Image 1: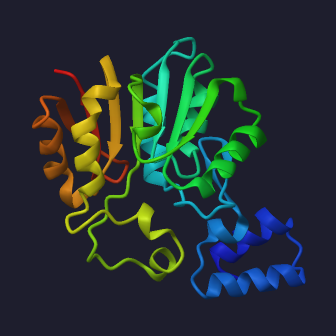
Image 2: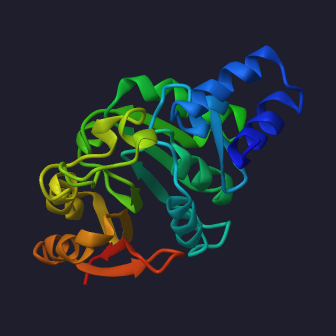
Length: 243
């Protein structure tokens, strides 16, 4: 029994090797990601459902989200946008860690709306402080501005070869973003200053191979942008604010 099979057995089946467990082992053997087979993944102490098969939250995203949320004390009042929300993991973490924040979720795929709502509800988070909107990037928010914007947009170059477990199972529209992987980040850069409050900050995940190019996109919009590394030392996050 390998590590993933053991995790599956313990997490989903309570250690009992049922016929359903054997079926799920076959799914793993074919390359399906463990998160989809179990149906959820942990994220900063929460259980994030993957019912609608959104992008599976990565440990890198969990790491920088924790760094971001530690920037404020728990009593701070602010507006927080989880852009390109997918499962809503980042926004749910904000709801949990910042109990006075109003948290917005922006996601283009309507299939994920119920998953985000489920993740709020089943983690016993405050639904009155959550607002889920479906549409393209900032479009569902009109001229709203936010204190904090966190985004894990699609950023993989179209020609990059990915592992089978990613390429054949996870949603391509949440992974790929044009020839250089910057199509969505380019659009975010152009629109960001209209939706970020003065004194606000945006944390945006990007491809390590194109982090410097992504940084230039925000600088060209007269925004201050710096690159930060993830827990593995890879250039992974852009921190953007007004100069």
